[in-house]
Image 1 (spheres, rainbow, N blue to C red):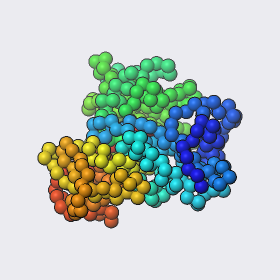
Image 2 (cartoon, helix red, strand yellow):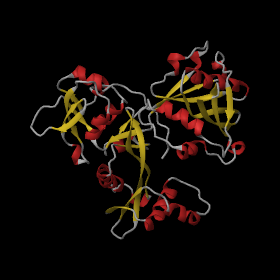
Image 3 (cartoon, rainbow, N blue to C red):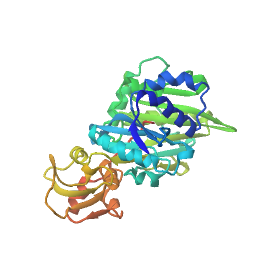
Image 4 (cartoon, rainbow, N blue to C red):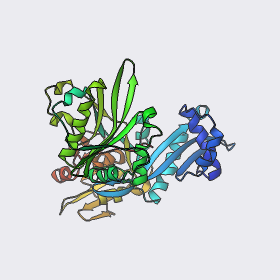
Length: 392
């Protein structure tokens, strides 16, 4: 088996693997060739001894927020193997080449949407419960109203106001992308809103945007529901504006599905006589992996005066198999043989560092051992707000 980063001439064959494996229906695949060959991302392939491509993986390059800073992040997508080559370890072997390459290219973390948690744990990823989705009838929000300006965005119009709200909102959330206007527009893109039933609204107060939401209309006979794809706000009035506007759809939909990022629990703040009618679903279809443990430990917020050691275990990226001394403004490798305050796998370190779990949860894992400075480590590794808004 040969693993390599794909050349331009290989990209279309890789695309065809994903078309087959993801059951895509493309009327004229050959018409996509020029578009596919112009794409800019790292595409990896596994080839058999005869030179036939067996499997492929795309590694997208993003910038994600982590404790207020934007860090280079990988986004794994299009993981696919032709059925005649499955169960031969092709994907695992691609990760063993891809991840060290990502380290050399400056990535700090890598992310993906898993088809199976156990499979990706084997190559260092760990689950993130990143969002809760709330299901309720619009009438549950009857106590909320918004009397400010509501503007329905039209295709082709500027997305500047949406982007301004987004940037102010997500700077406090880990794993949110550092979007530009092009990326913001991708989330709002629609060919014909009255065919696709996708709409975007911005809410303004005294002429200033304070919130937005993007939703789709889902018709499933005999009922229909409103699916909020994304929402963000800059202040309490902005959050109330979203709830108040959603309440207006009482005559249109039997149910609203509202996703909110980790750190905002609607059940703890809702004011409604029908709060018990709200159903909550926790989403765990996202995973994170540490690519560069030293840089990750440098980036995360640490209290002044902190000083502890952490021993990381990583089966794929050798540079992470180190003992690090972590201080408030410095992270260095420890060369002498010492018992670290924290012994941890690369899987658990990813969860802890981004704030998906706290230290006490981590200590229930078999791959985490605390030898000392427990209270300090509790202060460093706390739960944090998380916002995942990209698909890749």
